[in-house]
Image (cartoon, rainbow, N blue to C red):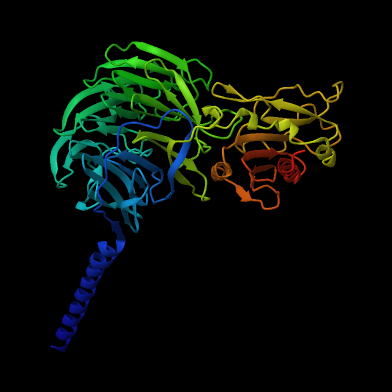
Length: 623
């Protein structure tokens, strides 16, 4: 009996331990009360009118940054935005953050500690997020909210969203139904956004499965969802585009594409776009194709920017057979496929439309000036007005695809930035119409007479102090839109070449790039290894921007350093603010009053800082 009692005691202890483990796992480790940070709101919000800011200067209404979140799943570390129902939704790996679209004030948010948001979608007044537990991809949770209050509607485990975009983290939903898939990605399910229950099932065509992990393999709106399919037909891999009615789960149309690559899919109101590496194709609501732009680089690495105005698709693409940086905008009649107008344009990073106008984000206002630019395009004939954006941008930075939206008289712009380093962040800037100055709108209202001559910022005594008496100045001019600046905005100092007249300053050089991408240590034209090393090499002084106020110039310089992978504050230059940019001390960006300047000197170390001090002094103490 004693042995029996011992055995029973051991069994009871084992059961108790197992029960404790289960209870701890369910009630503590997996419990909502400590994992979830969820705020809600009862404040009403007013919908916004469909109109953007008027033509002219732009000013910052409000802005926010969202840090990049590197979760356990590679490739899903971006940040995405949506403006709807008077709110701005920010989705990142950290969770959801919803703000008032007018003021930027907090409305509601949702985060789960130890989990990463890998997808989100919205339909009507519901918003749904998909989370996976860090380190355990089998642990999945889908959570639905009331889009306006943030109130929890339901939570389900095990559901897998269908074809999530790495670029936007979105997956399709519409008509209060969100689309999910199974483990092999060969079946679509419709899940009610109201209850979380499945309402229909659709098997994909034989030999086909959903593309997963693509940059943008699917897209949707309330009445239609489109998916790229990876199909095997007669031993050959070929992609297809499948359009589904989200309310009923029926196939609306099915089109074969031209390659086996995952297509980029984008849906506008009544038009579906697909780019698969061979061509960009445009389809009507019924699946009829009305536009084809051929070329393996027609859209570059991302989907071509496009918007839909009444009866007209406006698209930006790279023409086949043209130079690599050539970009064209065309307006195509949806019913006939006829091109109504077309023109060469800058490499627009994003488009938006509202109030009968098209807003286009250009990475640079001018090659030699600092700000990004916003063009307002008339959809009828392509006529354009230009204004500077109050920030610079680098479209090649990871973290967020450049994004644009317009509503309520405001323009919403999202760009990537390198700060806070090393992971970076996405920056959302909300712009309104600014005050009209006495100068042209293309310069933010600043008169052209306020722009200094870059070649006059270093005087003869300054050059002599830097042992640069044997140098010639090579000026470079710039324009913003249709406005040409009267003085050089950049001045490069080169040693005199043999046989060149002293003081020859009429040489022209290509405009310098606005980022710290010039190669350090490059030999200046006309120098050879046999020449004696001059005191300073590769010196360029650039006036990158003249702002309307000191505060605006300070914001511009801060935004510049935030786009740089390496930037260090310098407090010994003598201007109002200064940063050392790049891996060496060869580039100094500084602000003196309303002026933002950049000094670059390849050699010797410290030369850029010495020249920057002289420039700051001359601007503070003009002759």
